[in-house]
Image (cartoon, rainbow, N blue to C red; front, side, top):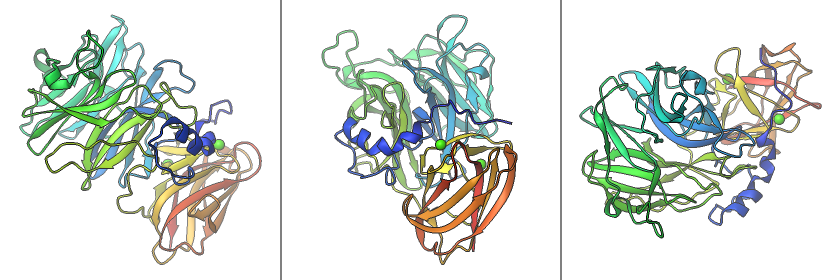
Length: 464
Ligand SMILES: [Ca+2]
Ligand SMILES: [Ca+2]
């Protein structure tokens, strides 16, 4: 049984400062007036970095790193998984992979990517090999996109002191692992995805292939790190973090997976209060999306980053337009169905809460204090909801869930009282009447009660 730790830092509690902070950090952000409207960054409960999207069974899974609170370097110890089917409400799947997964890893749970092959999920990550003190790339495997992941090999897959693996499986089934900083490498993975054929091959970093870095003789091209390789139509793309520091995102294209690469330009300019950036590009439900990171959360910066997303359209010739960071993020695809069980940790914007593994499986929302709230964007109530049910637990005296529409102080359509249950993982169902919830609305679960932590929420569901 896990008890919320009162001393844990609550970054999201500062979210009211978000609009002001973000406006000061970047001149390019949307003029969104308040965090109630902002949907970027897409996670507010922890700092996240180095996004890597993956689509499985019609759902978009997002693999990220995790910057520790208060870090003064890239202090990263685990990786995180999130998912969405509408690009705005993101479900927290917790931390199914960490340094502890790799017995041979010492530190630096940095940028990786997960891919699916034959019903298994392979997550390639760089870590410091304890035996050598140098970066190596490990691979973890799972039967589910949300893990749990295990070390597939018990040793590094490949090690040459360089980082940032990206994996691409071509239409012919051949898989390629790309990585590198300061150089750029690829190797052909075997069909088992945990071994390779041939030796790692260096991709020539020419200015024709990767642009010209101004004022640098030791690194003449823009390529810095973080390759992201994919194929669209018959063209191969490599996006990458360019020109440290601060980095921007640039890209090159090639007629084949091994090149030759031609530099194509900037994807995302230097913006957003993090001196690194990292691309993850994918098509989903008819739209094209760039995942990246910035320092836009309260307390954010170069070592306290947050993953964000923008929707974009390729130009007719296949080139990528210049994409700016926004606070509004990607538009919602479809709507959320409030009449099926929704996890409390499915969130468009969280103010003041965090998440933790639930004793009932998955995650639950916790650290709930008076006035905290969760935004769920675009809930389709149709002709109207009659009741609201929630799965709750409280080691204290509980409180109440206010159901509001349009904003945290918007129209009140129901109030659900939550009793003390004798434990933070001692769960019970509560139910309450709802009136006035019709049409498609942004739903706010606003939590009220006395002082201190009030209760936890595992899931909720409306009924007609
Ligand atoms: Ca709180
Ligand atoms: Ca849950």
